[in-house]
Image (cartoon, rainbow, N blue to C red; front, top):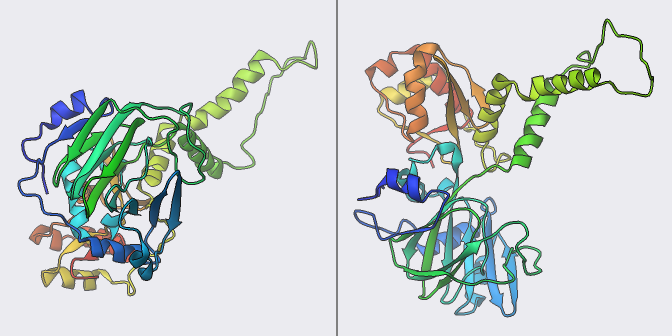
Length: 382
């Protein structure tokens, strides 16, 4: 699915991470990709992350999934919302929505959360720390936009919802099916369903916190160090005062730390793994039966189509003429001759196969490794 008459360059220049934008139905033909009953069915599954948010004024109640099927029959007629995370992992038609936003690097994509709201349902005025495209799927929702927020913005006391203590709308829009609202990070917003069967698709983008980057990279660096890697000071001059830590010692100690933390090769390797780690890393996505290269080749020769697993993340880093491939948090080895193929692999969800590919043992070897770790699947697999 692609956006029609949408100026990507203008958007990136004037709106991305700067200010909200209402995009009136830019689809050639908007078709809601998921039925409300299907969404409710996903919320009943153990492996799916879901929540019910029920407005019991002045309180807000949150129930975590899996949601018992019978629970839906007991819900009130209004003022509740069902939220289901990472629906793109389970529904290919929802995953297709991401194709419209591939002008943003894939490593920034988080997932597609889908919400269903009864009339007047919402999750309260709040702000997020990431960019989001809010696509109206069914029904109508009123969005109110407020001021920029930060960590000092007052919040209501609630253990699970970050609700704003005060909210004043500066803009208001009514979104109908196919309309999109783009919101940069930290903008206060409040969405309320003004119709029955209100569905919204939230395409969210990751924004790593500096603290997370520092902490995780330091953990990685620590794992590479040996006990023999220690401070030394041959040629030490006699101390004038044994209680002083000299400026030279401090400089050398700091340099020991800086040499490791500022190593570009180490950071590149770490971030490739870090940024491609799957959202739910504990899920086992490996196939029930591993394939040999000859078995995989036979599947492809029969015309079977390989796809990227919707839960998987692919990315590459360019280092001069060399390319490093990272898939699902792991570096991947491949022959340098496959550089162009790897770039194509990371840019598309379908693995394009042709005669040259089928005749390349190095390509088949790479695809087999990715299939056996669960990062690639056949299109006809469940």
